[in-house]
Length: 278
Image (cartoon, rainbow, N blue to C red; front, side):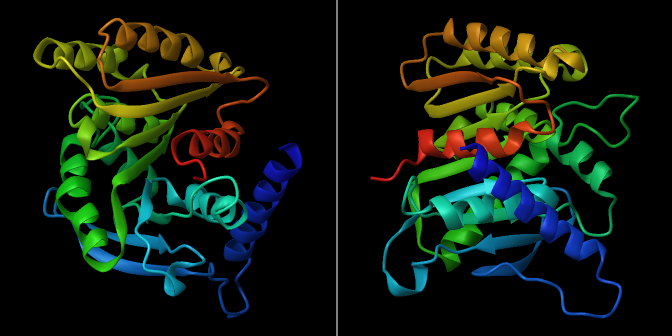
């Protein structure tokens, strides 16, 4: 596993270094089996790109494939793509990967702060528009992908890390049926005085079930920045107390991992949990 994760990290380093060092008008490296589609969000009036990686076998089959949607694509898309190249059809099912770019023309930090957070905070300008972003995913992105590609509609996966994990928790507590599986790493549950705990409590008052398969992960060394481990374990206790009959939830603390090193490890473990090879 360590050698595998090292290979993924090296591949990501080469990929990103190549982008930064492209000063001689040389052609940019393109990921195999990948495509880019333009899309305009009606929910927030912003433009985005969808980075799509099809399974290696896609052109030679009539199979419907699981759909994996990811954010923070500057680092996540090449890592997920490389992992699918190595593990797809071996350890996990081959899947269609869709990465959602940051909004075009906006700073990446602003885009993710706006789109991935559930409430507005005065010290985080532009924050608090996860609701519109969730609508964008559910009403436009998923239908657009299903229109053009063969998607297994009972095998949709959301992958999020950090603010992306917070976004996943927001979707889970507002529209859990949007995805069948969630792989959520290091969710920023500290955000806005732990507002996600209140949102889950509000959901529980109105719903008796939360139908989803959720794999949470956090690095053991993440309490060094914020109480990430403590928050996630407390959130697990709160969610389990509801006894939602169709919720399958697991939480794993990955030993020795930090907030920045944890993503490749949780991705590998998470995908094996939610879409293991049949």
